[in-house]
Image (spheres, each protein chain N blue to C red):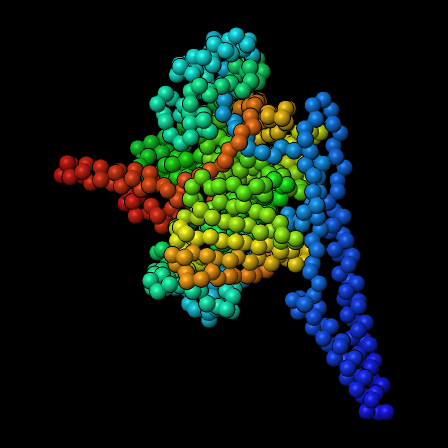
Length: 341
Length: 269
C-alpha cells in the first residue's frame, strides 16, 4: 500500500507533463499558418498587406458622373477626349448633365449632410474616367432582354399592378430597407449618397462595408466553393480568389426576388477589384444570366480614395416611410368605401 | 521512518494536486500567447460566438416559461448563473423601475424583436456568430444578426461624428488584449431580453483577450452615470466556430419583423 501512493503521485506528475507538452504542438501549428508567398509584382506595384496580398484597404468612393449606359448619339465612341470631358464636367457643375452624366442627388440646392464628403457640392462633380459609359465595349448598353425574360418581368409587374399599397410585401425592397439598389451586387454608383465603401482585409478574407444600409460583405479569398445551391440569398453568395494583383469575386445563389435589370435567380456576377494607382481602384463586373440576356455584359467603375468617415446607415430602424405609406393607403381605402356607399 | 515516508508521499501528492488544479483552473496558469498576424499583433481573425444565456438575461436566473405558448419548450428561458461580476447591476432608483417595466413588456419593447441593430455589448453575445476581420489600421467586426457591423479604428483615436446604434469604436493593443473604447451609442438598444438598458451616456470598454487557440475572453466595463451608480462589468468566453465551412451567412432579419411592425396596416382581404 505504501508503495502504491508514490506511484500514484508519479503517475499524476507524468500526466501533468504530458498535458503541458500536448499543448505545445497545437500552438506552434496555428502560428505557422500565417506566412504566405507574396504575389509577383508587375507594372505599378500595389502596396501589400502584412500577408503579402495586394492591399485594397481604405475608404473608397464610387461616385462618378459616368452613366451606366452610353448616351444615344455617341455610337461606338467608348472614350471622351480631354476637351469633351472638361466641357461635360463644366456642364454638370452648372446642373446640366443631360444624358451625358448621372447627377443623382447632386441636383442644385440639394443641400444635405456634408457637401464635400457626399459630393453635393456641384463644384466637386467629376468623371472618374474618360469612359462615355460604365458598360465597356462598342455597344455600351445592356444587351436587349430575351423575349422570355420580358414576359417573365411583365407577369411580375402585372401581378403587383393595382396592389402596390396593399401590404409591405408589395413595396420595393429599398423602401422596406431590405436591399437598396446600390448595395445589390453588382455594386454600382447611384445617387451621390451612401457611395462610400470601406475595405478591410484579414487573413483569408476581404470584407467590404458599403455605407448604404450598412451593407457588409465578408468574402473568403481562399478559392473555396459556393454554399450549396439550395441556400438562396438576397445578395447571393460571394467567394473570391486572387489572380495576380486582382481580387476576383464570383457571386451566385441569388433569389428570384432581387432582379437586377430584369435578371432571374440564375444571375451570375464576376467582380474584379484591381488597384491601379495610390488613389484609384478599378471595379469591374461582368453580368451573366442566360435566362435574361443572350450574352454577358461588362462594366467598369473607377473608384477614388477618400477620407470618410463612413457613417452608420440605419435604414430599417428609422423607417417611418412604410407605415406612413400603408396608413395613407388604408385611409384612402376607407374614404373610397364611404363614397361608394 | 515509516511516518517520515508517509509525510513525503502526502507532500508530493499535495504538490501534484496543486499543480494540476493550477493548470485546470486557468487563473493561475501562465498567460496564453496568441499566434501573430503578419504585422506582429495577436491574431484575432476568425468567426466567434458566445455560448451562454447572456442575451436572455445578463444576471443569474432560473428557467422560466417563454412568452408564446405555441412555441412550447422551444422558446423558454434557459437558466444561467449570469455573466455580471458580483451578479449586481447597480441601477439608480428610477432606472431600476424602468428596467422592471421593460422586463414586464419585453416582447413589445425589446429592439431585438424588431430586428434593430443590437448595439454594444449585446452584439457580442447574441446567439449568432460574428467575424473579426483584422487589418493593420482597422478591424472589422461583422455580426450575422441583422448584418450589423463595426469598424474599430486602430490608429490615433478619432472623434465620433454623431450617435449611432453601433457606436464609435477606437481600439488599441494592451499586450495580448484588444481594448476597444466605445462611445456615441444611442439610447435605443438594450443589453438583453430581460429589459436591462442604458442611456445615450453609455460608455463601454471592451477587452478581447485570447485564452487558447479557439477561445477569447470577452470583458466589457459598462459606465452610464444617467442609469447606473457605478461602472459594472460582464465577462464571458467567446468560442471559435471551428467548422471547416464556417461562414457568416446573410441574416437580414428585417423581413422577419415586418409582419409584427407593418402587418396591422395591410389591406384586409
